[in-house]
Length: 462
Image (spheres, rainbow, N blue to C red):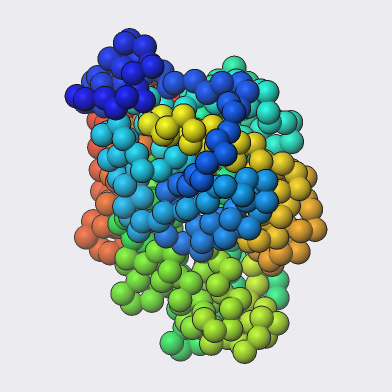
C-alpha cells in the first residue's frame, strides 16, 4: 500500500496497524490525535467539505453554515457533498481504504465509528473536546453515541473512553397519525396502535393502516425490526459476551418478528415491501396512510402544501396530521438516529484545523439554537429545551421527549456486515420469502458467525 504525504507524520507502528486493519487483519489501529488547541487558521480561500447522504438536512446544513459560519470565517466556503442513502457507508469507506479523501468532515452513523477508528480513518479529538467543548451541556448518552469508542451502554457515557466525533444531528422515529381519521389522541401502546390502524384501514377504503420502512438497503428494515423488538422487550445481543444467537431469537424476539410480519405488514399498502423514507412520506402526503413511522429529521416536507394533498396551507395539514412519540408496550424504547461529525485523518493540516474550528463553533449554545431554528435537530440540552427548537416544528417536542428512551444498535467495527444480514432477512420475511421464525434464526446464526470470526472483543450501544 502507498501512503499519501499526510500520513508520513504518523508513527510507523500506526501505519502498520492501519494497513493490517484495512486489509482485513485483526490488529486495531489507534487514530491520529488532534491537538487540544486549534492550530492557526489559514487566511487563504478554503473549501471545507462534508460528505452525507441526500436528504433535506444536508441542504439545510450547507445553507446554514454558509450563512452563519462565514460571518466568522469569510474566506471559508462550506460544501456538503451527498450520495444516495444506500451508498453512504461505501462512499466514505472506499475513500478511507484508499487513504485519501475529497472530504474533510465525514458525517457518520453512530455505528460506523468503530470501523473508522479501528482502521485509523478519523481523528481522535478527546484532548480537543476537553479543552473546547462543555461536555456537561449534553445528555451524556448523546455525546457518547455520536462520538465515543468503545461505545457505552445505552443511556450512559464512559468518561474514560476516547471521543472521535461530536453531534451534528439528533433523530428518532415519530409516529405520524391522521387526527381526522383516528382521533386527536394518539395510541398509547403498540397493540392499541395496531388496532387503531386496522380499524382505520377497514373504515377508509384505499387508505392503508400503516406505512413504515421495509427496504433491504441502508438500515431500513433492520431499524423497523429492532424498534418492534425493543418495545416488546427483546434484545439485539448481549454486548458483554458478544452473543447474538439465543438472545435476538429468544421468545421476546420471536414475538416481535411475529407482530411485525403477521400483524403490521398486512396493514401496509400493496407493493410497499421496499419502502424507505421517501415512500413513507409520499404515502402520508397523499393521504394514503392512517399511521406512519419516519425519522423526525425527514418529516419537515410533510407540512409543505406543495408536496401534500391534505391541505393548501400548513395549518390545514396540521389539522389532519398529528406527531407523537412512539407507543410503548413492554418497554418504551425508541430507536436512536442522527449522526456525528468527524475529522478525516487524510485531510490537509489546514483543512483539519478548519474542521476543528467549525466543530467548536457549531457546538456553541447560540449556534445550536440557530441550527434548531433552521430545521436542525440539536443535541445540547439547552438547545433542545429552547423555544427556537420546540416551536420550529410539531415533531420537535417528540424528539426532546424521546431522548431518555433511546436505544442504539450494535456499535462495533462489524456493524456494516451485521446490518446487511438483518436487512436482507427482515425484508425477506416482510415480503413472504421467508417465515418470521426462520428469518430471525438465520439473522442470529449469521450475525453470530460474523462476531465469532472477527477476533474483536467487547462492544456497546445497548
